[in-house]
Length: 120
Length: 310
Image (tube, rainbow over all chains, first blue to last red; front, side, top):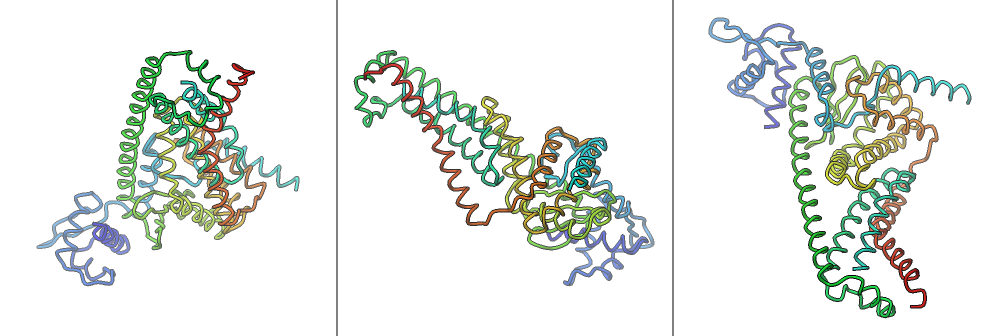
């Protein structure tokens, strides 16, 4: 299961890197996972990604042309938003490095630090 | 009856007064151990008190010296009262502990599920740095870092860290997050939350959630300071805190950041592993025995009061 998940990440990596729609065969050629992958394996993974709405596809002759629905930066921004906007208990699944606060409060902290620094 | 009452009184005293002392402990890891052991000790001592109520001789063989005094005290209430109160107390305690278990299991499961959902998205959207605790890098401007429990636990960080912090400060942040995973802090936080939610009676229980959260942050800071120096951790904390999500602003974490900054300004040196282990052992043992010691103290005081010539 985890192996398949890593393959999903690798496939998205290829498509983001290419910047253009690709067929399964082309993705397979560009995948650099250190092992020989079957065409059907990659096809299944890309089908899953399509189902999870990471990829869109268009029929092009006999095969599908797959493209990423969002850029990597958009995907990252979505992930950050989704995780940070989860309020209450979902938030508790994470431990943040610094989980504050309004700009105003950070200002207070920064001023406190500057005062301290100028005293030294 | 009296011994049981003394044990209950001792537990209540510890549950009431211990938090004030525990927050003063210098080493956050020792404080964590002492707090959680105190929770267990108070519950165990209350359970012991219930058990004593059922024993025919109240397990008092050792106290025959006070026999005379004892007799006079014991006649205060009949055996039926003892059995009934013991039974009621035991039933109450069992119900409470069952609730702790049920809520704990549910909370742990829900958080594990949420963690997996987060990870599903992150695994695809992020670039992966391998390691015993992999780091998932997100292409995002805001400097953010957090850790997510799991098998294995992962650190999630944004490229924004590199834009706002020096390399040493970035390493300090990552060390802090890995310390959360290595110390199993997510589990401790969940335990604290469940204790606070299910046993909202004494400060020791009620404040467990907030205390554990503060202690784990301090413990992770200590690890980061040991590896990268206090100044790097302090500046990283300030710069990352300045970019926090408004929606996630909680009074609790504000307090924690201020406490952490104050601590880092003192630049305390991290203790050695052996010393810390020793302190944890001592603190744990002391915390475990404290309710019983308080009970003995209460009992002695009572006897001196009731039978000054006994």
